[in-house]
Length: 125
Image 1: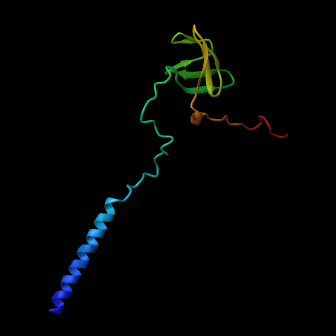
Image 2 (image 1 turned 60 degrees about the vertical axis):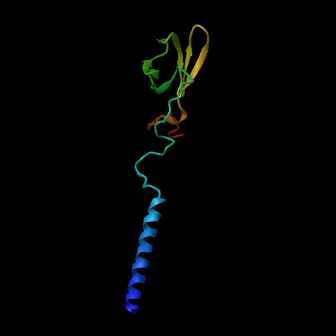
Image 3 (image 1 turned 90 degrees about the horizontal axis):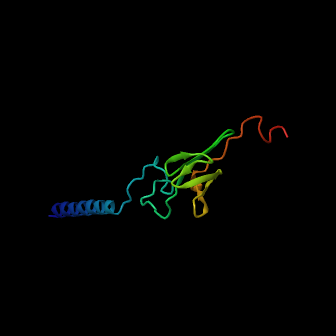
């Protein structure tokens, strides 16, 4: 009889452990992909429609300044959606329409600093 009781106790213990293991998996956090960018850099889940103007990129080189405003490449003097491009800076585009002059800023996380090449500023001084 004692071996039968021992066998029942082992089964009960095994069932309890299996239930404990299964229940712990219910509260486990899913594995995160280590190659996925942080949520702060991921694409927004909701598009804000507070402004009809959006600057998505700015390119400044020695001989030109080009910005992408509302999906269209523009330079100083160009017109877009009834507004004239007055200036293109590293972080913003200055526009004027018939009513007012205004600035549309590039999102701060997207600004890249220029690379200083050998022989440029600060070398050998």
